Length: 240
Image 1: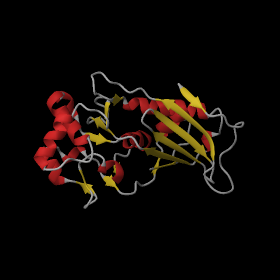
Image 2: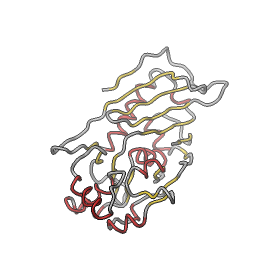
Image 3: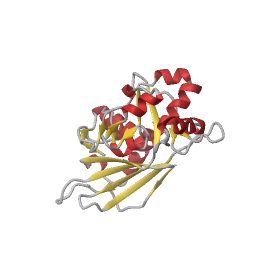
Image 4: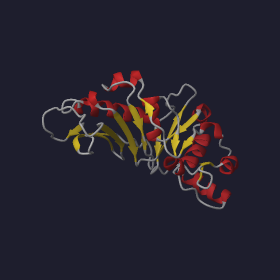
């Protein structure tokens, strides 16, 4: 169910001072979309709740497709309050860390494993013993857990993404990590600003599944089919 903030009657978002924006925020329990004018004044905001799955004690998962569905629902509700077709820029933000696994066809293999999930605690302890230090993010232990417990799914993994990266992929077709999300995987080398070859080698994790890291994600154009699904103009800028 979405929660719609009350705003005045529908209006055009473009203004003399510049371009209007939509900001998409992937949170712990909801996707929130905020419409703002060129002066960054909020005109409307909609939140759509997300379901967190716990099929076993200590597990915490979400279906990545639910993030997309929530975005569509939020924009549909928002369109009743503001002219979302006038939006010139779409921003994607997330404080949520999770491991999203794609196959060679860029399809989701299994529900995303959230950062608070406890299933890979044994793997995390093993990594600490092997490397002599703990990793700052959970993705490495999630991958080791999959290799041991869901071998068929693990063999299908061709790309690891963050929630924000997955949504940007659906919007633009671009596969990438920003540096902040990469650092939260445990597979990142802050010194080089890129993936840690030494860590990946030690854990026998293929670096081929890791998309490029971009310190500053470059603006990308919104894909035509994504724009049609969301009720937005194709080609508008999508930024991190």
